[in-house]
Length: 248
Length: 387
Image 1 (cartoon, rainbow over the protein chains, first blue to last red):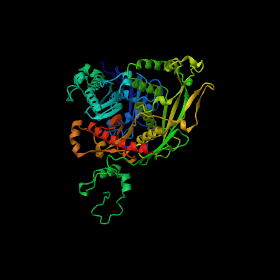
Image 2: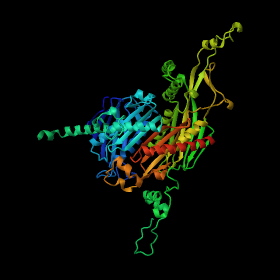
Image 3: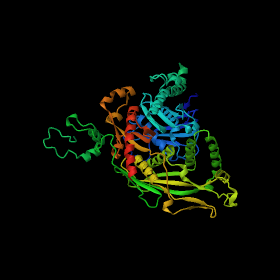
Image 4: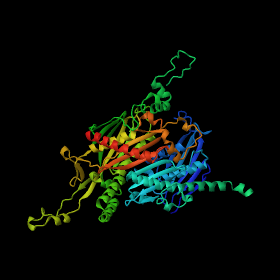
């Protein structure tokens, strides 16, 4: 299976940016983060003691609609929880995350937004790391589909996602907490637990799982999504500090 | 508990606050004090609104409240009230730009479907038609004054928009409405049949039917589902979804047919001819929030324990999962869980489950919440059946 492709700090004028492409689902996201910035007319912010997280999702071909509002709400609550919004310089300021869907199938009106959520979450996380936003932990997210025959498919393509009985998006923190779960379709709780187990092993690698059967396909920890996030950031740091390495 | 008297001051002036003021000044401490009363007081752990942790508010539903709609309902969950009206309008197939293409592709599907199960492909086609042609158009408005902070003349808030999307998306994924109920057919008269010939030829029924022209879809009913939250005191989605459900159960569509002479759709005004929608299942939504006891959690330089450590610490109960949160509780918690369940042949099926905004709820809690939602399903079914 082809892993995702990501790179950091592509945009010059944003404080931080990242592009993320998932070949399996076809989604390609460009994310930009500006933080901390002064928000206009935010004197009466609900929580003045911490940063206000704003998320904007722009679809590739149309203007943002109600579906995007919904995705923004979910991203805001998921990301707002891991951002350390009380660090120096952040209270009363804003953290603005803009995510543009530059590639992949359009999410149509009334479609569930969950197929694209993992890509959006990854792009947002990498962009925040690129902007040096203080975070309490990192996370990784994955999309799983359950087919009619009961097989669990990782990162189903848009057509496979339409045919699936149930779809599940999971995000696990770097410390194995379940940060986000979105599931639609028809399923039972036992199925969900199997899917969760599988999602955890995809995100964290084989290290944490006790069940040998589930983790077979995913291989070593370096193939995990958390490892992928870490490697992407390491690569960026390596190239950023190349001048220091050269001078040694 | 609210007084901050010093021992040196024998007669404290009115430094003690009535509970309502304490609730406003120290909302977190107020709710926490209710949920974890001192062991000496022998009081049970109860929420500030007097409910137990997994207790829902009193729910009432009334269907058919609006006369100008095809179906309507008012659902009240505690102080949150939602009015839903369903209005059906006719969409002619000749007004659908891509109709001929859609029809051709659906016929292909029919050919394929004969091999796989017919009912499944019927489901698929239903979903396709309803979704592609936008036959269901829900909209939710949080009206002015439903809660402080909703000012007149403002554009729909992000909350209202995302609730509209959630309703639409849930209508699509549950396939609640059958596309067949929304089709208006035209059966062309069989000009070759024996009525027009001399009757003595003795054609049998089978050949007569296969020889006749095929009936075709001339129009669709489009259901405009408008939800208005007239009072918002937390948990708007459960109330809105319950009102949509009750209104759709109440919806009656007049008998409609294509009149070939006038080349238009005619509707019967006879009440005896109306047809109710036949819905697939009864998905009931239940929402929860997780209240974290540690008020300082947000202030510390956060070192969050591993998930495993957290599990072991659970004996101390750092957080409470509150069912059907009211506005006060929603303001104090960030983590939300929403479970939509249906029951099929006595088995509980999860239709949608989402949780976001925190990390304290995991699979054990979710399993419990699914059980709570299943109990809520029974209660809601009883309420909706009575209305």
